[in-house]
Length: 145
Ligand SMILES: [Zn+2]
Image (cartoon, rainbow, N blue to C red; front, side, top):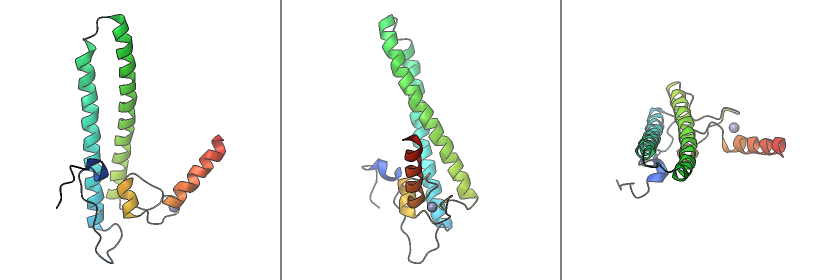
């Protein structure tokens, strides 16, 4: 097995799933694959959140000058927003893991078709198939524009 460390963004350090011919969609092996994928992604996000927190603690005491403090606060608020996004993503990952436990993972929640392994590997938290996703985006644009 080639190490994927050189390309860590692809599948969070995991190998892409290799289907055997004719195997059932979302069988136990596939569910296990996506569970591992989601857990690896979650671990990355949690490490990122931890890093942010300790970084902010380290720096909080270092700027007695008010001007320095202002730019530091700006930086912190940016980090807090990033952290907020990561927290939401972690929540979504947890909800997705629950779907796997309930055998409901991998199917479009709008039309019920198989979302597909490759699409799920690219977007493990996807709940819509490509068609429904595209449709939803078009509708969104019509509402907002
Ligand atoms: Zn669909």
